[in-house]
Image (tube, rainbow, N blue to C red; front, side):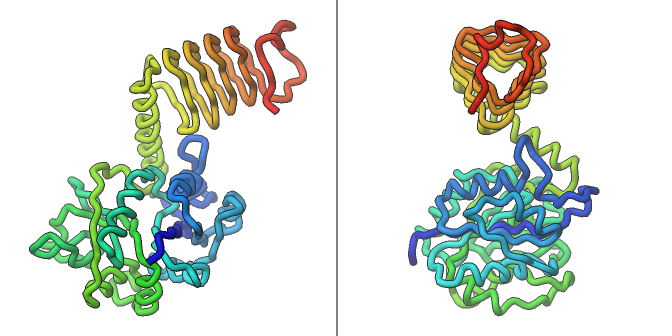
Length: 353
């Protein structure tokens, strides 16, 4: 089997509980939509192909997809197995490993996916599933193991027996398949369940029945596999995402005075001995130097702030603050500004090209 990787992202749902005309996967977590977060993670696997299955408001979702991503339509939402079937024509001629992701699960890390791929390849499995052990598994598919702890089956919550519902290991819905397994077993799926849907989990059952290996990787961070169904869950995951970034920065030598009142995007880079004051928001690709002070109550978007500069109570967008400069308080400077609040400001600010 080739080591090549393809990624299929399932993103066809409407997201009724979001109470929005916007497709669920286009709601933002930080400065990027959830689907953009998922695709950024997928790209770290260096995939040969990336396919996104779209459905509700398909044109809006397709409009934000990068050129290297292939959209396919799922006109009727008949389950995960049905969604994956829509991607099969685009996988024709592909021989390798196919990772399935979800457009509303934005916190899954590339490190976890690489671990999934590593075990999948090493064990020569037909399928490898990512799972987690949780305190409250209500609503999730349960992972049922054999007596020797090997994989037996996955049963959806509504189809599970009382005994199976007591299992606290849940299915994330994230898998790595061999392309052969998908081509062999997807055509065999039938909607023989209480939901009348085609379950992708049945591929695992069919592989087991044929004596194929189905492996399991357990993530220790259940937030990685948490999906978004409503705006409360979106806010909860954004908080986790922001905490991850702030913790990483603080461990690298950045002082964050009030982590509960500071928001920094993943693409922001900050040098040592820089201080981030409360109420600061850093969005997009920003390069912040060393020994910088930003804040309080400052927003910086797609901008660079060079070493030893200070930006206080201001809004900057697509600019470069020169080394040692002092900006603010109460300035609002954006690329293309026709007037500046100080005649000397051009000495400390450049506009990005």
